Length: 333
Image 1 (cartoon, rainbow, N blue to C red):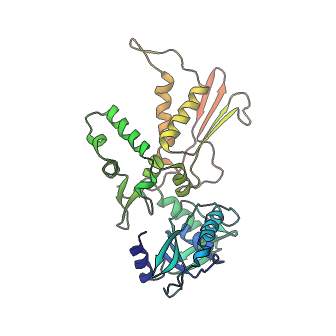
Image 2: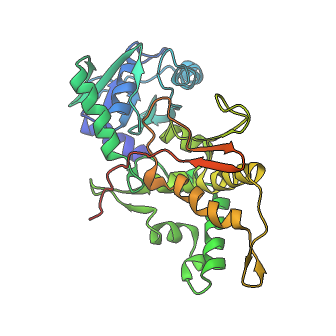
Image 3: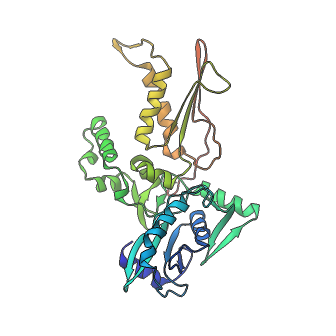
């Protein structure tokens, strides 16, 4: 947020996405109730050092470093926020007074603070105890998040430019006549559909952009439950002989899963015409691409089954991929 955007936010007043909290030298006791409510609803911004009526009180300048540290530490403490969601505060000087802004996106999962679930409505945070309301929150998130969902607060600077270059190089290799690889990075993301207008009418980067080009920290912040789990059961079929857990961008996830397959499955000699090809690569590159397809990723299940299970019943191999629930594809017919 720019300083002018902060001023506009204060002028607008408290609502479903904006919360003010007086905070001079310590965090408000109900701060994480609002954090939890924003994560569970549509996201929002918390301004510390501003009264309910919009009057700028300010934060003690000598306490700012500790306040920012407390926000980072407590947001990463499962006793305070479960599951954890890394947050940080940005300092602004408004009319000679310091305030702190915490921008909170909507999360892909349901969060609790002190074992309670909160929901944001109008300008208040409400504890959710009814099972049907909790189910409504879960179902809304399940139906809402898909690879085309625009994620608020994600900027171009959050992406790894090396991954964008990798995507452009793949296009150049596979389709040299396609002009996308000649575009600058921002134009490329826009033209490829990674930067688009949301259903609310605001422009932003999609969940697919985060999964393809985001840093590991960004991916974990936006989709805390994101991971791929591969198991081998060859001798110990009750547990596993080898395991790979992947929580990184989709490009590196593909390479890691393919490497795991190559480690455990032999590549038999095979000719296509007069040319030897890798039958293993030909079969499994499509399989792995299907596993990591962001369109099929569902980050909400607790204790999910492995994404890839390789079992040996000599001389046969059994490859199992669990069926995953598909999210609603927003903006598609």
